[in-house]
Each structure stands twice: as structure tokens, then as C-alpha cells.
Image 1: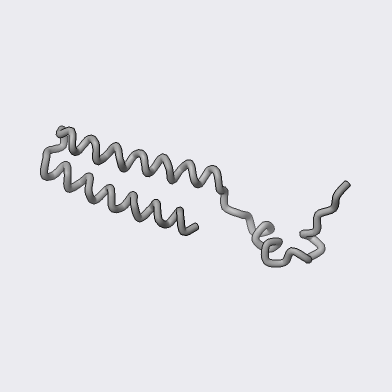
Image 2 (image 1 turned 120 degrees about the vertical axis):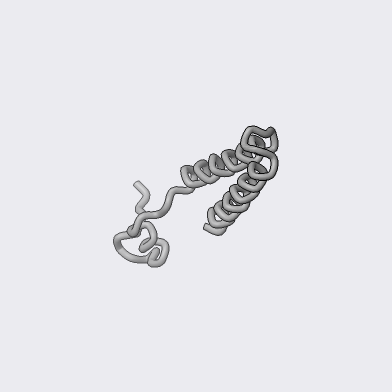
Length: 77
């Protein structure tokens, strides 16, 4: 989850940078557009990471903590 937190921190930093670039260079400047493109790319990456690593449900967390519990045993056919 630290990767997820890290990317959200990066997004926040890029949003601040994009707002500053737009206020300094104007909303229609290439610098402003490039800064918002960077934000969009990071948001897409965060979305991709979330899809590839879905959150575990309560049962999965329980089994991670209690692998020997009867409910969590896996049997080969």
C-alpha cells in the first residue's frame, strides 16, 4: 500500500505544480498543458495499480492472519 500512498502524494505535488504553471504562464500555455498531462498520467497509473492489486476482503485478510484456521484450508483434488 505504500506504493499507492506514494503515487497519491506525487499526484498532489503535480497538481500544485500544474496550478502554479498555469497561473504563471497562463491557462492556454504549453507549460500548463504539459503539467496537467503529467497529472493525468499519474492518475491513470494510480487507477491501473488499483485494478491490478484489488483490496482484499475481510475473509482474505482473516486467512492471511490465520492460515491454519479450518475455513482457510485449501485441499488438492
